[in-house]
Length: 399
Image (cartoon, rainbow, N blue to C red; front, side):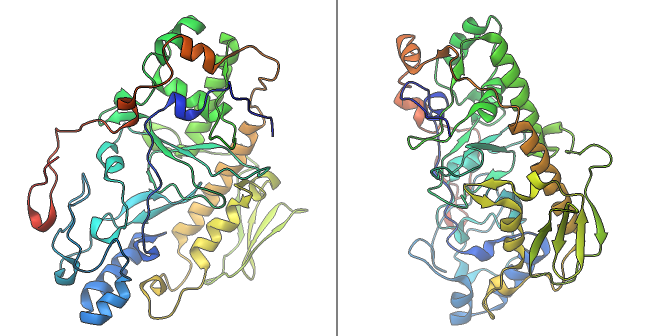
């Protein structure tokens, strides 16, 4: 790993408003499919008294009698869970760690620390930059992007921060240090948009003990090439969200199911000679490039982690134990797409520009231009007053 000097800007310098990862408090509120979440909710509300409490799994932050407001933008009940008998909240898509999209029950009563400020700005224009936990010498990207609300989970190491691209709904007020866009526009001789800064960060970000480091080139041509590369990474990671195309490998390299996956696979392996992913007893997918199989974040192999999230045993009698009786077809489709995403991402990472020995825009230059340090107001959530939010027991929340 290239040593990051103190004069290389951090993402924290460039995108000053950040939010800590969500703390869900109980794992049963997340599942790879919607049917499972609805079945878990139905089991919870059908139970009474001590059984409901045991299924819920109270914590210091949440019990069956906790009184909390609804999450911004979500139409869920706000009566105490001890009295809840209504229908299941509509599940929403969740980026559950790197490259794993699952579903979440978006009910504030179920989540220990839900970070309402993130929900308040989540809309069809928003993108979330998610820093990955720093692991010394650990392979993998320092930064990922998602259109789905991220929980900020990290497979290893200390979780990073979540940085929305925009501070307000509707793509208003970019989450960038004031003065950064004019400075970069002057440096590179053309207008620089917020999406360009995010794209460059995706391509150039490096892990460091101090945080996610983002070297800025002085050369406009290097900047343009890196932005173009970062846009391609963004499109691959978004998987068709925000109007993009779903990622595809070239013909002849696209993974297919060569032998049907078993109903309850318990192990995942890789046949390097045949470029085949072996799923359980007899299941086979190929071709699977070696770089997709061995792709890691925080030192952890992504495909194995994805598989574990769907097959790890759960304690009998718990809500976590409610899951599909057999491997759903939709999981196979998601697995094929994940293989494609990892293969393309690995190929793009091989094109990352090397800035060693090149002139860079340093933190000292940013300080001299008045861009750094970012004002404290830029590090706090913006006021969002154009939306009504429901408080506890159905009352209107005061923002």
